[in-house]
Amino acid sequence: MGHVNNAVYIQWMEIGRTKLLAAVGMPTHEIFKQDVAPILVQTNITYKSPLYLSDRVHIEMWLSELRNASAIIHFQFFNGQRTLAAEGIQKGLFVNTKTMRPKRLTSEERASFLPYLDLASAAS
Image 1: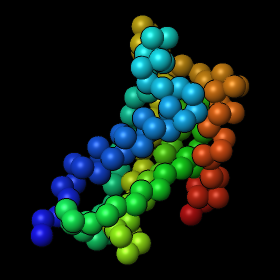
Image 2: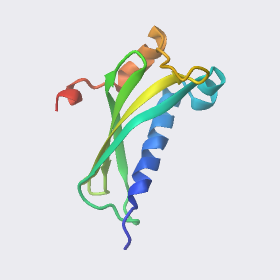
Image 3: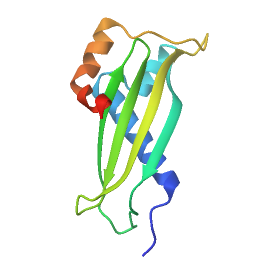
Image 4: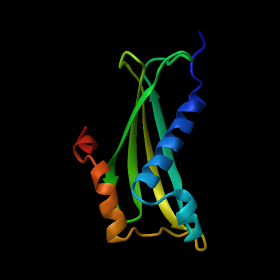
């Protein structure tokens, strides 16, 4: 049985970020029309145990930090037996695509992310 390639974890993280943006009312196809792009500044993955191609994978994600124009997103990847296979952290930034400068979130946009914010995880 082959293992899941490490590049796949990054694809899963991208899918998670895209779904999160849609869930908070900021789907990428809409914010691009407003000259806003969510970009990545950093990606870090620590592999704990292999996932295999036949595994059912469970992914959890949350925000540990929400700033004016950026956020830190955490990911945990589990196999079907709920064994932690990997942990990931990404720092994302919203930018104005015309200026490539950070684009501050409005108070309404910030509020939409609050259900996904877990400040306790930042301390661990």
